[in-house]
Length: 346
Image 1 (cartoon, one colour):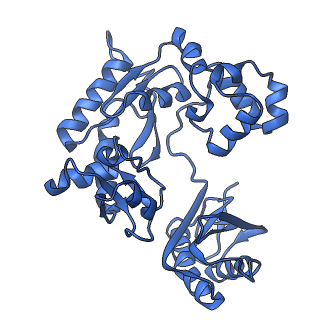
Image 2: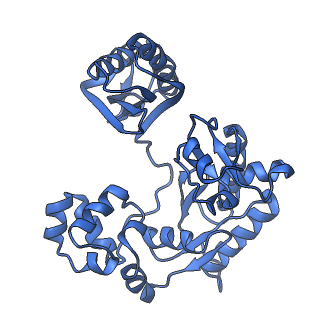
Image 3: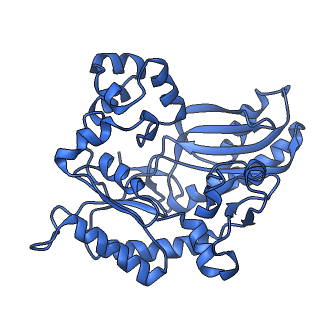
């Protein structure tokens, strides 16, 4: 979907249309969750601090997110997807992979299906979507970003390697800013540069993921579209109105974060082994601290104790804290029998 959260807000409120808009926190302390295309022209992007976004665009309008509305629209869109295939792998509320290999009607194509989906999304939600069509997930993702907004781009099998070699490595889905910087230090700037590296070289510098980089530089990606992917982590975070340095105040701020994580655990019967504390300081430096238990963490009290212990390791603080986050990973699905104990089917 194109600027999904912001587009929903502009659809539902005519006064916001054709204006630079940010969905997210307060103008002073929050973070941009989504930016309209009018705001992006000023350099405003998602995950940007609201204060920085406001400096880039003084006329920027802020609205609070309405996740219940976004989820409802997302359900509408997924229902449209389901008219064409059962192989749907959601990435987020506004993005998914679809595999239509085995459901193509006679004399039809994936490109035609993508066009139909775009038209039906527009007709039924009044929103625009961009689609990428190709023979694997990596290329389809790149193609979906290539002609935004309201785009449809196709990468055919004979075009794949040439398309990849002309991109900067920072444009590769899955290669973030830090990894791209490391590649640049190694003299790797483009897909062509990446393709010229041996598998041994990439594995030596990037570990197991080096093989993935070796493959995608050649436009190879054998990952299947996987419906109902297992969630890897659950977390919650909060940006404070003022920077905090007092330990007692920060402990108090951990409570609702742990409550939110544990609420998910209770609803789903999922448990995890690794708890991670995320800290963002007043100058936006970000650090994490984690602890992994031998056994599954089985109570909210345990989560809170570990989170507090991790926080304590940071004192005395070098500077104020503007954000705290708590997440649980190494998740294991289970079911809760009548005696309240967690049973795992491993």
